[in-house]
Amino acid sequence: MDNIEKQYDKIYRYCYFKLHNRHTAEDITQETFLKYFDKYNDSEDINMLPMLYTIAGNIIISEYRKKKNECTVREDDAVYNPAEEWAECIDIRTAVSALSEDEQELLLLRYANDVPVADICKIIGISRFALYRRLNNTVKKLRSELMKGGYEI
Image (cartoon, rainbow, N blue to C red; front, side):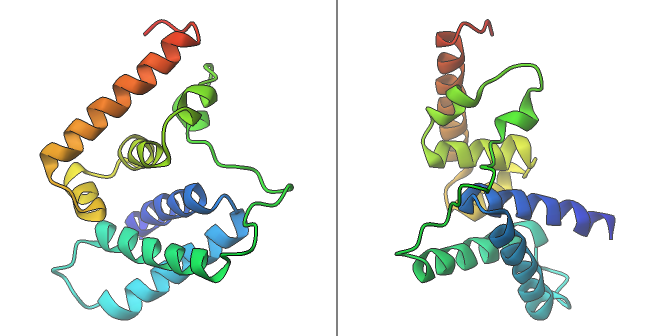
């Protein structure tokens, strides 16, 4: 049960990162787990984490399509920024926001959610070597942005 709670938190952060809406992220996270347990509960050969990210991603895409003409960010919703979790004393929001959404997602999956490399490869659909290149380039870009802000790394 402890493992499911950890996975729940990771999927919620992922949904919140994608949607920037706390209530919708909660709903989609719950829907993700319901679909997972409905379809894969008896399967022992299924790797849980990549499947959860895939299900969540598909539900998020459906949500985008459904609300295509609506604004999904309300003024009273706090926008999730993974930088707040990564470093308490350093404000790196500006550096992270300089990264593309795909680069931010890679950092979230790998460093905030501690998703294993093999699972990220399955989620994104790229090889291990391509992922390492992307991660290295993203970290270099983040480091460069931090140095522009006067932080020594």
